[in-house]
Image 1 (tube, rainbow, N blue to C red):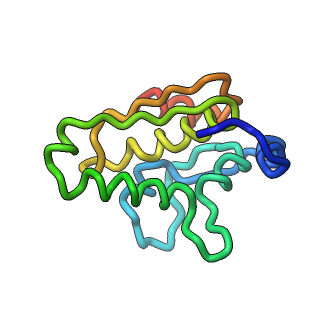
Image 2 (image 1 turned 30 degrees about the vertical axis):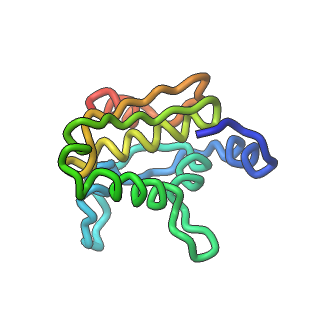
Length: 137
């Protein structure tokens, strides 16, 4: 993931309010339950929206990236067992790599694990609940 370049990127950086987001295991389960997850974490709204918001009827960046990755590894057991997944980025990209890796790692059975995040000069992505859950993964 690249760092901030455009005006929209800097607006993403500036959207610093923490939002309550579902924990990654509830997202990974694709639960169709209408009830809110019992476990939420605080995540920087700008980063979360950048990665997970649908725009102009297009899927989110997260869904777009995961679709490409899954096409590579789901049908090929050799790839799933022998490939490694790295999420890397600098600055804004470091925050997005952290968030992407966080949610991707929760997709047990779909991707090669562990998912490794290499983040350089990333701003703070979430609250203490986020940091604890990230460290547990």
